[in-house]
Picture (cartoon, one colour):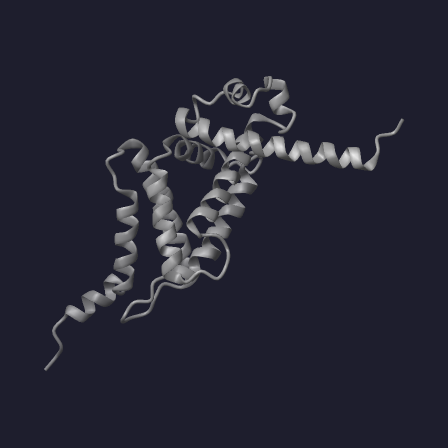
Length: 211
């Protein structure tokens, strides 16, 4: 007997729910154990599945890790208000700083992101599209958060988005090497400096005027 549409819908809904459960538990495991310590077996054990059963929901271990990063992004956007929307610039900046503060509490996820971001420079890597899309989304969202200095010209939106992302990603690598680094504090200092105008403009303002 052919499977009824209602049965198929029920199976699909259960599959989606199980996939979300796997991603939720995987976030906790990797935050605690780290990228290298989170084997497929450990992730499977955390949700009561065999390794084969876990990978039934994902094409590969790499795809599983990509979806874990997507889940982390979705959670951060929801909790800290940095997703696409109508947030005011100061709210976006505050949310971004809070994300950097939170990242200091989840080194395993930071290491996973840093490791995969390097591997994903290969266009054939399963995470390549994720990082390309994520970078574009961050630039477009955070462009609205660029500080407007009291004098001088602000950075154009795309340049600001790229600078902010480059600083954040670079700080995370430095922080993995030296956890004493205050990532959130440095981002905050950068944003405050940008509100004061570019260094060239500040230096020009300090020069004595001709008589």
